[in-house]
Every structure is written in structure tokens, then in C-alpha cells.
Image 1 (cartoon, rainbow, N blue to C red):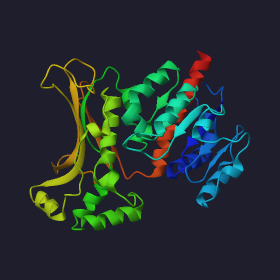
Image 2: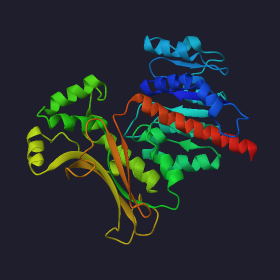
Image 3: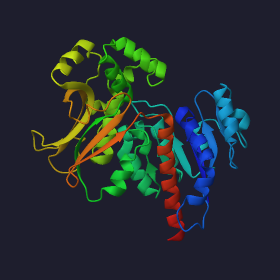
Length: 370
């Protein structure tokens, strides 16, 4: 079985994904889908669209090594294109040359666009969707979830929160008949690194510069340090795990700009450590009417919050330093489940994308043999 893939975005994660499927080509062919070995699986990249390097498509499969070389040398992909010209990303999605859209475009935390339009067009045209972009889940999760169900396609997003850590597959497959009642988390590697460095007496500005030198902070770090990335991830978790309908602007948000080394020393003297904590909880409203963006259930709403908090040193969140992330889920079955991801890299995000693609491949085999 051949699974054709279109990539919208070919940055660090997209390139790591391309390398990963090349490196694991033989293993994927022989191990997946797991249906007794009667159908070998080949993953074939048939289209790539970028903002800076152009667009290329080939129904027979692009030369991945040539695409990687072109982008790494700041060149263009257009020379790899085979077939009629395609004007934009939506034309590529609608070209009928793939089974799966992989949405890896840059995040727009305010609107989720154009990634939402990409996902919507793919589902409407019969493609499965895998996204590492948080925007579609933070701004249009219910619409896209329902659209996928309507067209009998899969909409998967393992890499949107905590890179490739299996959060959503664990919830989907490992927590049946479970209600998530709340969570606490550290979800932004950049701010966690900055706070860790500041504990050593380094100024906020110098810690930001170190994060930028490592490549984990942008030239403008506002999205991280002002809490927007964390708020977006909080909205994603609420929408998917708690059946909410939350936007990043609905999350109570305070960043870390006001945190100083002096404040961290004072907190440390009390046996505590400051962390940028993401949290959500179900709450009874003051009125009997649920908010427009409440979870299911009469008279219930969900409160999402991102803010620096002083946590006790025996709290697992306090032990999460550097670029490591942590998520503590509270539920009505397992009470509390903790997932930790240590020092993530783009390759781990690419793995989450691959895990979703293989889930789609297994789904297609099931359809063929049922």
C-alpha cells in the first residue's frame, strides 16, 4: 500500500519528518500496517509547499533528498515540480495527488489561519489530516473534528502539544470511559529554560539571549514569554481532552516578564520554585447558564489559566527544569496521570507526525479488510 503525503511547511520539523521516513523506510515497509504482512506500506511525499522556497508536486513522488538540499541551500523547490502549474497551497491540496495532508505551517495564535483553511480543504476533498500546528485545534477544533467524521476521514494532531509525547493517543485509546476533570502542566520549553537560567542569577534579558542562541526562542520572544504559546496549548488540551470550546484569548494569561532573579531567590528561600504553569479545571458558574464556550453538561464551565506560580520543591512541576515539559491529568478513573517529555528536539515532533501517519495507514488497512 502506498500512502501519498502533502506537506504544507518544510521547516525544521518537516525536514526531520522527511529524513525520518527515509531512514525508517524499510522498517515501515515490513512492520506497518500490522495486518499479517500482506500489505507492505510505502510513505511517498508527493507535494511540498513552503512560504520562502516555493512549491513542488509530483504524483509519482518527489525526490526528497533534492528537496532537502534545495531548502538547506536557500534555493527553490519549483525545479522539482512535475505536472500542471499550481498557484497556491489550496490548489496543491485539491490536486488529487495524496491521501494525507500534513499541516506544518507557522502558528498564528490569534486566528489559526491559514492552517484552518488548509485542514478544512483537505477534509472536504477526501484527505486525512495530520497537523503539528496548534492553531486549528485552538480556534476550530469542533468544526474540523465534525468535518472529519462527516467525510469519514481522520484528523490527528499528536505533535501539537509536548512534541511527540503520546498525549492524545493515550487519551483516545488508553483512557476509555474516562472524564478529564482538570490538568496542570509546564508546556513551553523556552520559558522553562529562561526561568531555570534565572535561578542561577542570570538576568531575564541574558536568559532570553541564551534561548535564542540555542534556537528555542525566536528573534521576537513575545509569543513565549508573554504566555501566548502556553495559552494556545492550554486551549488545545481543554478542547480535545475536556470537550471544551476554548480560544487562547479565553485563557487567563500572565507571562514571565515581571519575574526577576531576586524574586526567584526569595521564593527559593521558602522552599519553592517559580514555574509558568498551565492549568484547567471544571467549575460551576455563578449563574445557572453555561457560558457559550463551556464544556458539555448543564451549568458547567471550564477555567483555563497560564501564570507564574510558586510550587513546592516536592511537586513534580518544580523538578521539571530546562526545556523539559510535564503534563498532569486529573480524571475520574486514574485520578492523576503524569507525562514527562525530556529536552525535546524537532526530531521528536517529527516522530509524533509519523505516529499519526501510521495510525492512518492502519485505519486504511482496516477499511480494506473489513
